[in-house]
Length: 119
Figure 1 (cartoon, rainbow, N blue to C red):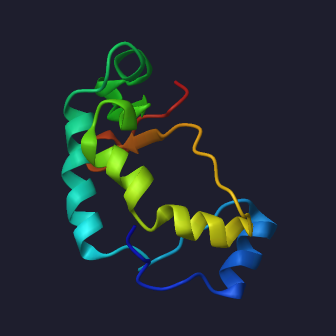
Figure 2 (cartoon, rainbow, N blue to C red):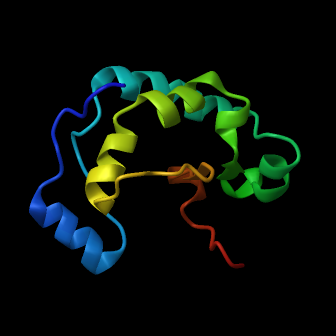
């Protein structure tokens, strides 16, 4: 398993505890980013059946998919080999982390910005 480029700071952990979410920058290597960018593009181009196709709205630039790790080797590697699990472990202070499922939300920008998500 790869190590993160850096560990989370105590301030980042406090922000997560306060807000329930965290944007942790520069924790993944360029190799992981370069590996996952095309994997995300593959899902955008062809969401899974039936979940991804039913939940996505391509006319509005929205892609939503789940369970990518079950059929995509790059997503599976990200779950089980990337530094993500180490960072989640640090963030939660847990001895054991159980993976439940993966989920992807993509909202395209530019030409789709004018559309309301709820119209």
